[in-house]
Length: 151
Image 1: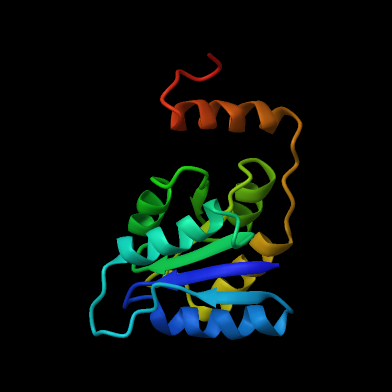
Image 2 (image 1 turned 60 degrees about the vertical axis):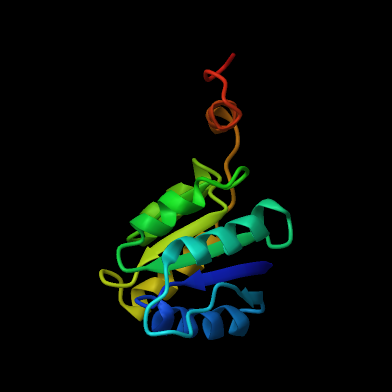
């Protein structure tokens, strides 16, 4: 699977470890919005990774900032992106099975490297269930397109 990955300064170290982990699992990884300065802004990486996923140039995206919240907010502004903040394997699994999330957001401050790898593994291996969840995703897309859900 092709994965676009990005972070701000607070997530850079853990993301570097995740990139190696993903490559070892056989994924193609594009590091975007790489933070090379002491301080960089999370919306820059969120946009680059999310745009890459929305344009179909990557199958999934992974973003990391201090809390993961800023990345998730910014990523969800890109049409076609369903970004989810996961802090454990269960939330990563449900983000895929129920919500068909295509971008995973992680907290550098609250998630150690070992847990982050387990969350990423779950996110990458879990498929969307479809079924009753399809209707809900269509309603989210309606909102994204400026319509009331189901209209």
